[in-house]
Image: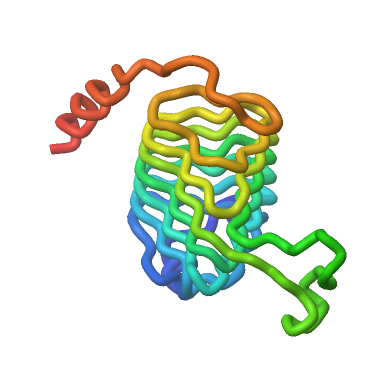
Length: 189
């Protein structure tokens, strides 16, 4: 037995869609699989939790999700092509109300809680560094980078690097990777 699911096993897990050259660790935890769509050339490493709620999770092409990543919530979560989540990243599309006006946690009936949901998008060529947290409603736009241990509670502008808690825009990022993408895709023709 290998450490990754075989193609046959992946096809039997019941994904909404599953591409080619997909490697998912047997040690990853997958929930709501029928609401998860995975493109081509994707790797999901050990101890990840991928939990799709009502909105589902859409994972594009050429994506790496490193060890101990958590992607979860009822809002739609999208990881666009060539994006990546480094180890111990947490992406949330749902959030409890912590004001004290409501109860919280998933064991309490919904009528006593005030959970909010909002979509999250990690754009094409966007990267999220180790230990960063992405909150509901956030878009990390194309080519943006979130530094390690950052807390992202607002959208990140395309091709900028964000760091801190809360994350703040620091410096621009080169767009040369777009030329490299074109060159790379030509090699596939």
